[in-house]
Image (cartoon, rainbow, N blue to C red):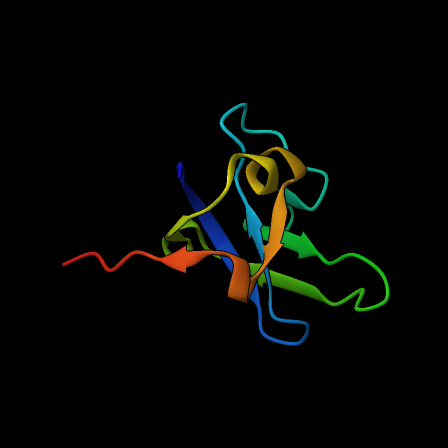
Length: 81
């Protein structure tokens, strides 16, 4: 399973990943706020702002990484010490 950096939406329990290409339909940089912006899929539609340091590594399937997100139960957080 590949390892990807992601951010968890606490509301819908979905983890959104930074793709290797650096482009994401859900995560974008907000220049005005100087933070990243996560916009969840429907029906959640929660908008969360976060810093790069809040990203965490997850072991995830290739399909989920290509899709850009996975339910929290379908990926495994990797502890960094």
